[in-house]
Length: 437
Image (tube, rainbow, N blue to C red; front, side, top):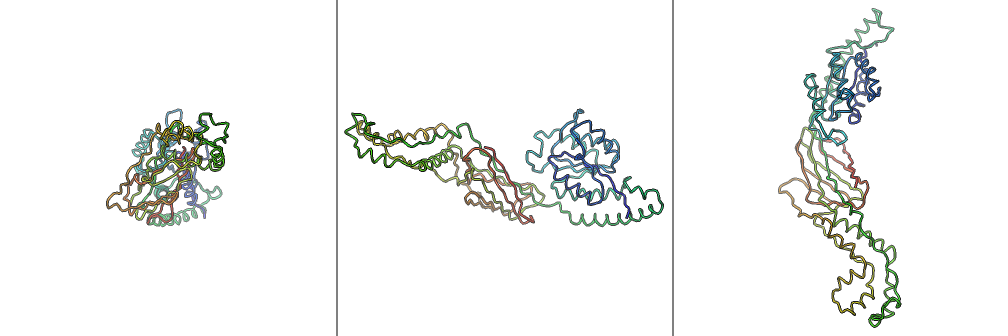
């Protein structure tokens, strides 16, 4: 069978739409046509513009995919994507434009902070391309591109390409017309099938967690060291009547090991950070789709470097493994002072570590408040929080910020693994959030 193959030029920004481009190229190849895109050129090199220009001229159709990034600019002050689009307009190449709905929630690396340039480009496209379609999800985009391209080929066939050994024979032309007629019928059937399957209504559950912040004092905890052993030579003459060899020996025998000191320091450092860097854990669940989500379950698992606890949980300074210094006891008796607490801190040599906390921001503990008649619940199990929401309307969001606290226990990169499932999803959706502390 001999059939015409059409060349389709695909234009878009690249890094934010790489996955969508790959699937569109695959869809065009499955239709037995020829996709051409920026992957074949060094688009950042303006010396390549002449090649791109000639490629657009010999293309039968031009497909434009717009997200929420404008892309790098040429010396003309416009993006390469806009330059390609305006040239296709000038040459009257049939244009199929697909514009992302600006309400879609995207990560920061997939959208510009300043949307002024992309919004102007969107307005230009919507003004000049009357048949431009909006899209929100990748699957919706691929189906819309396939259907629109099939319709365009049927309604306005381009010049296309055919094998050179059949181009100039009447018999080949007759066969080609017959094949095109059959292909046209099959394409109509395929369009009807795709249109019956396409579903524009689906929930899109998204989750965002506010990142905790730290200051320059985050790593300022001063670790406790093992005290040196004592002897009677360390006792001042005026204290000798208040201390004995047995006191000294008992003290030396009860000094902690290095492992005991290490465990104590680990716990103290944890409490230091809990008291000074805990913040309410704010979890935002939103539905950016086009229909309500039902029976939403979200599992949020935090890496070991992030500590999660209920906001009414209290923490106190751990008990020191260092025994009471008999020299301090003797000094106390000598001076006849009664404040055991201040003497304890003085002899331990660790009071300064926790005393410095007064200059830092205290933990922000708020009472747990559960909304009345709200059909949801949360559960904390170790490092994992499960959120259950009975239903969530599209374009609506829920914020959970009064049940749990979060605190980083160390500097560096931390990960949060997320699994989402609801009645409308066919499988579990997974995601990952990264924090750099």
